Amino acid sequence: MIDSAALIEAARAAASHAHAPYSRFAVGAALLLTDGSVVTGANFENASYGLSLCAETVATASASASGRLSEIVAVGIVGGRMGERDTDPIRPCGRCRQVLNEAAQIGGRDLAVFCSGLGGGEIETHRLSELLPHAFGPANLGIGGHA
Ligand code: THU
Image (cartoon, rainbow, N blue to C red; front, side):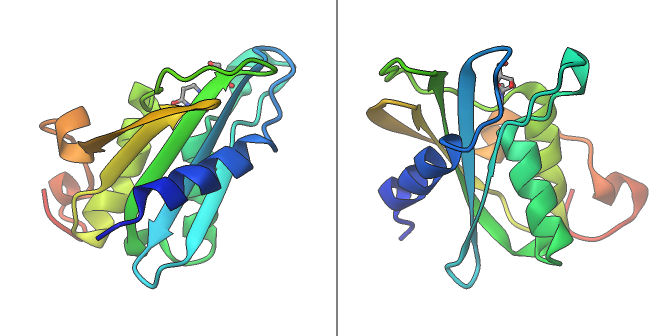
């Protein structure tokens, strides 16, 4: 049984490292790996706005850079306006769903996706396959995992 509350807390801690001076919207993501370890990321904005990276993408790239892309089993995501106590859950943007799908397919498992607000609130539980049905991925190119 995955400890979704612990994963969301890790995401909330990661959000404190958001570099988001332009949107003032902090996002944290925490990836649970098969051995129980956690890899985190926060959104990383750029003065050239369109170059900004989402928290889920930063975390997934970090796991990949450690050689652990195939070990991701779940992701916790929180977001909200800096300095506020937003409790509405945020769900991953479309691009991040596709980025997470790379890990899901390479690892050969659907991902649990837990979503909450930066300031607390309910934890929603989703599956990546529900958030991104009929995904295009590495299996379509004959590489790794499952379609
Ligand atoms: N953001 C994320 O980090 N993840 C998402 O799934 C949605 C949006 C970031 C991007 C930008 O830095 C800020 O939130 C406002 O869009």
